[in-house]
Length: 82
Image 1 (cartoon, one colour):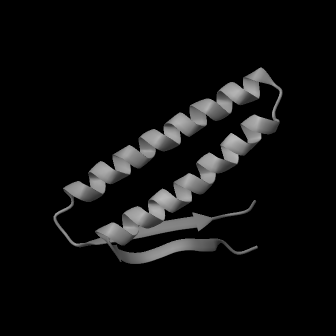
Image 2 (spheres, rainbow, N blue to C red):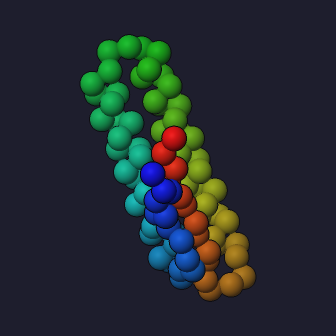
């Protein structure tokens, strides 16, 4: 299967941040849902750590976008199945 270009292009700072936040919210919600259904303590801890990392990544993205001197932000995200 060919890669899926999830994001590719230039976006305003606000739109770029909106897209990043939406994508990370979906991923965090996925892990939260799995925590509710997982009974394995090791899996739960791993998912909690992943959620924390995603939240940290979002904070870093906010800082990076805010620090840019340009109005447009280039985003690229590809899903490869293999």
